[in-house]
Image (tube, rainbow, N blue to C red):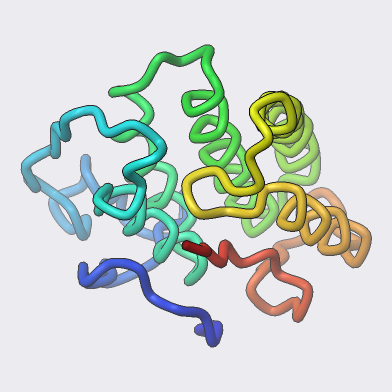
Length: 181
């Protein structure tokens, strides 16, 4: 299922959404969609230059279309260029963890989903406080406060249970990342 959300990157989507134990591992397995693909090593771009950060934008596109493992990988590559404990590093780590949480949800791991959701929320709450101190409404194009409200609404609609697969994209409350200028 594809959502009616804007695209932010011109990059193509992989051939499949990787789900562990269902699909070949994208990087390790010779049948993987990114097998032997050269790893990107982007230069650091400050959060104020998010519009020029194509890998971050590609991660948003991947996330919004259910490629949660792939979004995690894209954002992790960007995260590796940041100071891990500052607002930007915590923001990217929070997105990475939320993306991983959705993959756990899809795979039927309620416990994994809840643990990663808790960690993601902790990091993103830190970012909200930093943004408030700096009088920022947007971080890398995202109205974080508004998006976190969407995450709460989404989570309140869920009734996952251990071992039961749940595809977050099937919920009208899915918290897509909509970026603003």
